[in-house]
Length: 476
Ligand SMILES: *[C@@H]1O[C@H](CO)[C@@H](O)[C@H](O)[C@H]1NC(C)=O
Ligand SMILES: *[C@@H]1O[C@H](CO)[C@@H](O)[C@H](O)[C@H]1NC(C)=O
Ligand SMILES: *[C@@H]1O[C@H](CO)[C@@H](O)[C@H](O)[C@H]1NC(C)=O
Ligand SMILES: *[C@@H]1O[C@H](CO)[C@@H](O)[C@H](O)[C@H]1NC(C)=O
Ligand SMILES: *[C@@H]1O[C@H](CO)[C@@H](O)[C@H](O)[C@H]1NC(C)=O
Image 1 (spheres, rainbow, N blue to C red):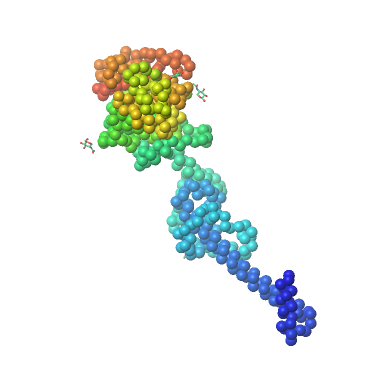
Image 2: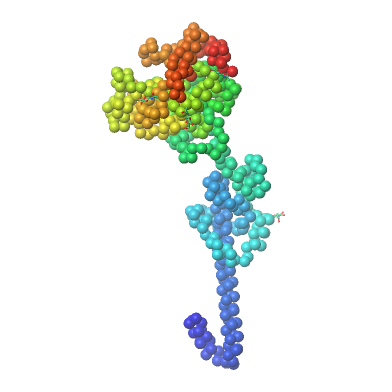
């Protein structure tokens, strides 16, 4: 106000010959004011157009960047903008912006609502660009081609969004290949992930993971083939052979392509535990695996698949043998250097061959507290495979463990290796004894089905096993 008054004062004396009447002065003043307002209006308009052009093209470039590379993430963050192409003008992209994209938060904030409302020009530009766009071909191709899933939604935009997110989930849930290129560190990290919401938002048939820790091939494969036949979708198989083994299972076999990346294993050493952990980690990558069974190449199933599956799934207990043994081969293997992480009172012994659930499998692969103690202080005559899991269970999962294993083995002859069974041993009587020869507790009741698997059987026992399997073990 003060300023304009002063200007008026100055104007009036300078234009002395125009000093006609007060109405004239008013006319002139109005004229100049209009020009001023009009001029500044144009200026503001130009500035705005420029500014908006920049921000829009900028956004456009950002999306161009993020859609293909960030994939899922960017789609989740900006779901309601599937048609970014139509909104974007075609400006020649300023290279400086391309090379140094500032953080996404900044990118998304700039277009402030009040500015958007004021500028008049955009509509014509948009329609022109829309029809004849200078969008790179890659962009046009990636967006419509990605959602190839069938989906019955009428709205095109919505359909695109649902397709994107479906892909995200199904991708995430896809049964992973047994072979992969993850390093051990990467594998364990990925396997250790656990959803905080326990109920999955989809139907899932729980599977049993059968994990074979072998030197080479699964020796009794034909018997296992018979066992698995007709139960597809209820099991997954993982094989960890010694790395030098170069054999492959034929494409018709259930063992085909089920080998995981393996490393050398020394009998009785911690490398054995590492191999078990590798098997578990691979099996954990498949969300539908709910029970985990460790087997050797000389193990056989004692019951048919449906019995084994039901037995494992219907029990909330884990089957890890765990007991306290006095003497040289029990407590004698404990070392005082294992303190303070492991005390003698916690030290346990048990069979290497376990049947556990997902919770325990997760603990096994992500344990970075107890296992390093074994790696440092448990070497023959201390055998980690007989002490690590039994001790870990005793410390952390005492209440849910049954303290027994489902794998029958005969140590009665003594020595470092259990009895091996060859052809003449395999009789109907012997198999019946393995199946029903002992009593134990299962879900609070006493049962005579205590072992689902047995070892050690040689390949020359195979023909008898195959002969008895349908009749005795009711494979079919
Ligand atoms: C877009 O441009 C091409 C040639 O550059 C022309 O053939 C085509 O008809 C144009 N499309 C529209 C919708 O204007
Ligand atoms: C597998 O290894 C054996 C030696 O261990 C070798 O004789 C054989 O040729 C190898 N087979 C293949 C297919 O590489
Ligand atoms: C599996 O074996 C059980 C007995 O252990 C039997 O009742 C059942 O019918 C068998 N299942 C099949 C599919 O043969
Ligand atoms: C196992 O746990 C589930 C859920 O906690 C429960 O419904 C079921 O009865 C339990 N089964 C046994 C045999 O304890
Ligand atoms: C397993 O053994 C522990 C002692 O190591 C004991 O506390 C627990 O009750 C046992 N569990 C069963 C089911 O016997």
